[in-house]
Amino acid sequence: MEMMAVVAIIGLIVAVSAPSLSAGIDSVRMSAATDSVSGFLNAAVNRAERRQQPIEIEILQKENRLVLYSNEPGYTRELSFPDGIRIEGTFPPETERLILMPGASVPGIGIQLADRRGRRRIVRLDPMTGFPRVESVKAE
Image (cartoon, rainbow, N blue to C red; front, side):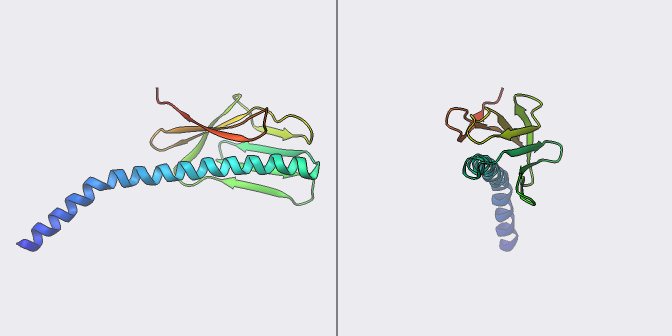
């Protein structure tokens, strides 16, 4: 009988803590995804400047990935997102391709990511500095 009580208490503790554990994992995934997008965009800007080559970034919203192309033969980079994170949209809307020219200003675009719980973050390229920054989107 005591063993049944112990098992019931453990089951209750697990049932109460499971939702917060799941939310924590989703939060880590979102943070990792926004960091990955920031790093991907930063690497593209740096490559365009250092190699003095145009760089194309393709935003494949339906396939949930970003692809980087260069003039160098065979050079492509791809970024896929973890399970539960998706590209929800771009700013300006309907932006599917972005070309970074060496010596030119960086276009001010944003990529909005969302998770299963409806939390959203936008990774924007700052046209003044060329560095990406992450913004949290408030729930409506």
